[in-house]
Amino acid sequence: MDFNLSEEQSAIAEMANSLFTDTCTDDFLRDYDEAGQGTMTQLWNSCIETGLHGVIIPEATGGIDLGMTELSLVLQAQGGALGQVPLWRHQLVATAIAKFAGAQLQTVAQAAAEGTNLLTLAFNLVNTHSEATLNVEKTNDGLSINGLVQSVAVAGLADFVLLPLTLDEQTRWALVATTAPGLTLVKGQMTQGEEVADLQLNNLLVSNAALLDSKANDWLVPRIFASLASLQLGVSEAQIKKTVEYISERQQFGRAIGTFQAVQMTMADTQIALEALRSNVWQLCYRLDNNLGCDHEALATAWHACEAGHSIGHKAQHVHGGFGVDVSYVIYRYLYWSRAISLNLGGSPALLAKLGDALTENNKLGWKYDLDENNAI
Image 1 (cartoon, rainbow, N blue to C red):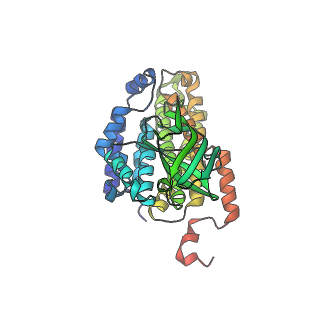
Image 2 (cartoon, rainbow, N blue to C red; image 1 turned 90 degrees about the horizontal axis):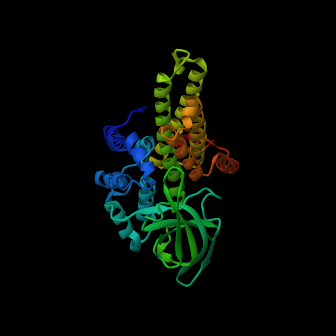
Image 3 (tube, rainbow, N blue to C red; image 1 turned 45 degrees about the horizontal axis):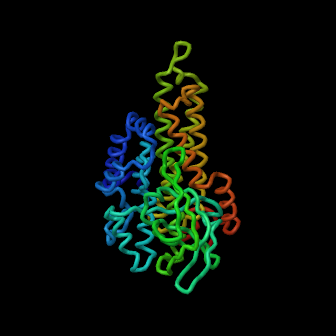
């Protein structure tokens, strides 16, 4: 079994790391904070120029047509540098359209691959999706939707947003133009700087052609979890690295505090949490790229992302002492990102409850039950 990255994977990881680290320096992030934050437009343009905005978009649609493993590498680089760009949402929506929408929507996916439009999706884990407050009624030509969808990332900048709906007791996804009549945006901002907007829907009409195939939900959800967990992996890894640098230099009683046993044990705990998350992320990406079942693994990975983000963030802040709450120093930004990722995932309790429900329905948890030689188990 070969756990090494291929030459192509190493190349895309190196390119992504170079782009994000060269751009998101400490001085750049400090200026970004002072400017009021928001999407890093120049960085997003660079992502389009390098093709990082279309890693998993099918080649027939104009993308690079790689897998979740490659996208995960890019997102880890983004998370580590705290690059505020809508990478995963844009290309997950474009790829979902390419795979599960009719011919009428394919131009939207093609424009996404070209980088001439911007796509996003609504996903906040409230009863799995953010459709809990939406009322959907069938009409002669499609659907009429009323209600509120909260905190949709970059909705104020996006041309289209993919909305999850409950229809005939199924979760369906509909593509909606942000300029559509009946849709009002109330813009805001997350604490880590990400632009968001509440979507107020008042008799929003959605045609049947805008509905993705019912199979889209099973494709989208685990990839959403994998994307957010990959971001968290990058955020936490950089957070640990920054903390190690700090405790190696910070002195107390004439010694670097990194030599104190309590600090060493605390940092060892963060590394254990990081490697547990890394194993889960790689397993999930492998299963997604090889079309293996991953319902349990996706929920477990999302849970690990929330837990690792909280644990590593708390410990990193703790060993920094009072310096950790100084907003002129970079470490607090990683804590904000971890909190935002956890909010997007829905938080540990909600994920654990859903994993428990999934295990109740199918108690054959583990990779071996998906193999042909174990079907008789």
